[in-house]
Image 1 (tube, rainbow, N blue to C red):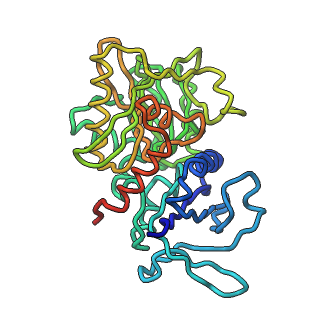
Image 2 (tube, one colour):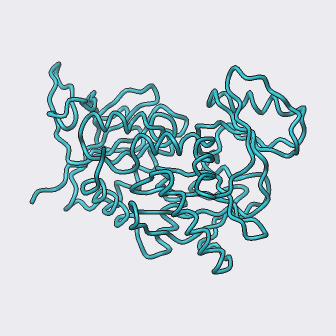
Image 3 (cartoon, rainbow, N blue to C red):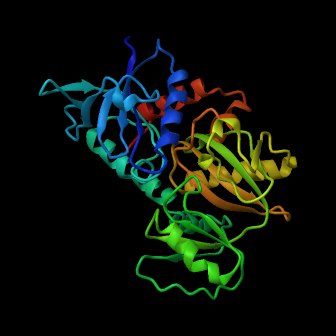
Length: 346
């Protein structure tokens, strides 16, 4: 049997483009060359699709060919432009390594559904629910999972700064990696924070600041068969967690440290893992996700957000949590590709 032809999509037009490129680099290092024949599909910041040699620095200027994922299921893959003519590359499976808008929000998943090519990760509906934090909170509450008290402010809504309590966090409803997030302690600072968040999304959340430890849990699988990774904890010296905005995140964060295992009581660890699984199922996730939560002093677990395509960089939390359970990134990739090929879609 020949190698699996896997299309790996990376880059993208969102602010998380550089994170996606670094994640793709780690995926490349951990692909078994005897199992997979990779086809690297880079999306530039302006949204141009190119088949290239890989996600190395300067990939856009290398030997690239314009390409597009065909919505024609008989193609089952890519249309590639070369010397004025379109050829085709048939793919067995697609591994999207995209973060943020147009990668995690259902847009890419919709195109993949049209193409008919099996793909790793969640479907359109789950992507939409998880990307919009306000919708994810509503689903979580229906599953009896605690969430922060929040208010959604749309583009045409009037802003009322008279909130019941401060401080609050102001964040884009549909963005990631802490872009556009502000902590606000005074009512007079609220309008500016909302405007900063609107640079990333027209819908903004104003939510209570939850007092507790920031913890996370990596999940792998589908339906009843889920593997929970080791729980991690973010220790902050000041401010709030935003490693992907550091100048050199590979060297660590200026204000935070990952602790894996989290160093919390066994009962709390078990509750965090079970809560992550409950949320994963309630939101219809499949393949992989990282569930970020708060662990309060009274033992309550509160949802922060669900990342349906978490970072896979050398410094990312998801691979570290899985590695702590004895599952290296190479095996994680094998499992999510296998799930894509054997799992059912609508």
